[in-house]
Image (tube, rainbow, N blue to C red; front, side, top):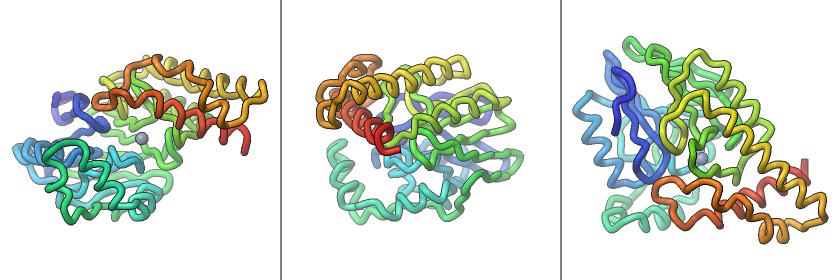
Length: 273
Ligand SMILES: [Zn+2]
């Protein structure tokens, strides 16, 4: 864990998304939660030194951002699409997958019930806790339900997975055109301390590289389509990005599969729309 500002703490080094918490004069606000249950319990013990958890804010619908919510007794805030995705999750499948993360996980997942958002927004929402202001802004891209979380008094933005900083970018559910708009929305913010969804901390200086990568991905798949490739041929043959960046922590060996999912999604995006 590292302390980013006087009241913002983040974890970027463990399996799952980057997550953090903010200490306010009226308790702690968490932003996303650990993927692994045993990590969630360690995180809970750490946070307990700083106060009671008042709220959890989720930034997106993927399980690496919200599986750990269940280990905290606090109401969750998120985009309405995040709530519906969590409520429609195949929980036995999730439990089977996360159980494989380590020897301690199966016992911790007995009777697992997700903690889904009970306070939802569509476009934006502002939450005031003590002296702190949390602004949630819908920025679809990596998924349709992405949100950036601004911690106004700290100058910090949790960008969620619209930024993968120097690690492989997952586009398996992306709308690349909306994603490029989201990056410009991030650029337009006053705040410039970025906690990306994955990878080390960064700032606006990384937006150009993230945007270029998305354009490059889109052009690459379009070139396959233009050469007459079927979706299956594209998935097998369009492998140029496999070694572009390292995978994030705990995802070793997953690059070929992730790249295939990226190709499949972009192929559909470019041919159906
Ligand atoms: Zn994600």
